Length: 319
Image 1 (cartoon, rainbow, N blue to C red):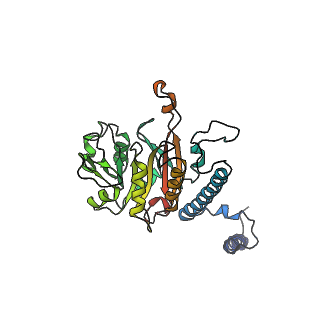
Image 2 (image 1 turned 90 degrees about the horizontal axis):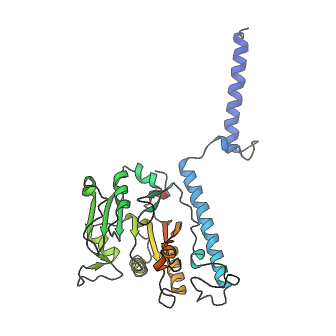
């Protein structure tokens, strides 16, 4: 039986009143359960902010545990990278520096599986980008360019690559992308040296040559020279922000009695963290312990670092 007009009006009135009161109370937090906000999804900006806050807390907790673990060792300034006594030291050097800062976006593998490919925090952000070209600096090209090729294919990136040991990108780079790919036979160092052949330069010098004040990504695999290179970078930008959004790096442990033995490595790492560098991904290179004629400890590890203090990073904002 159809509702009379008056009855229908009453039903609509009460439905509208209930919805109105629900909206009012939901905004004021009155008389609603603690989880009512689940009915109102957070904005993208709120979600990113929440993820960043949680990541920073997680990272800070891991730093505290790092210092506690170090202090418990008999010789805290000279801990072996790979202790031989599990009962007194149930860890290796990489356990002190876990990737506890979560990327606030997606993480994707770019380039080939195995050596040469890299993990990228927020790949979807770079794919969606329309405002400016994503600037990538790549050091240590060798003959393997699947990372650079895929970044050029999937984004509007412009790549600036350097390697003193080869003459060009690897064959994986398609001719269609060469207009956005720039290669120089130049080495990377903690000091400029134009008298070497090929010449060697610092990161800042190369950025100045390209009229760049910022790069979105730094990909660096330079067989142990990363310590001096990044130390110089920190010196160049002391008191300010590192002009880099994220870093994909392979770290190569040095001799334990060298400048970058345990204490030197520890101090170098924590100085990077003081600039806002946060480890968001790690992948221990196991080839060193599986290749029969080169079997040794896992002295190389791939990291992805995000600059959590970068005001220009598209990873730290929602648009």
